[in-house]
Length: 239
Image 1 (cartoon, rainbow, N blue to C red):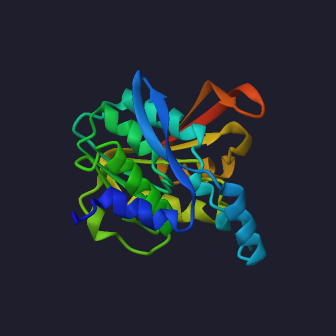
Image 2 (cartoon, one colour):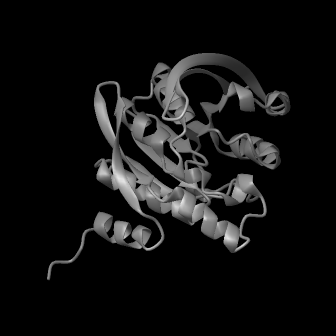
């Protein structure tokens, strides 16, 4: 009997807890495929029964949702001459931002999260889209002190989408960027305007030159139909 490939093995492991299927994402004329949870409500109900949800922002599987901000920031990175540069995505969830950014010429992308299930989904997405030669999936805790030796030489771009909703991460995120951003690098944080956190930009401005831009996009929600959303993108550069 032939040995299963890595993607099949991953899907078998994921399927012990989730009912999943790959769904297409159309970006700039290309089609990507991302793993979607079909039984999300059932999974959440089980968490509630086990009383495993103490903090909804941290304990619910927000990593399993495809956030429109990932599209916004992934495409936005094209403007910053990504060819040959390195990208580190923080709090990547299922990794949509990195999947999109990989289309634009980054030499190496490291997609990171702290949640084990998120990393399984992200790795499955990388393999399904044939991007394993460009994207590495790794666990990373930005609150860990000191400089991570993996990124000792500095990263050209650090990016995160919809991560600033966790206020207690603001200071650790800024410290992490201080330690790991290359001298001429840039860090990008994208957030829907309704979740905008001015305090983060104010805190970051003590150590970085901070530029803020706003991007309007149309999104489609099955329940609410087409909507126009505004996203803010904070760009941090060494002062």
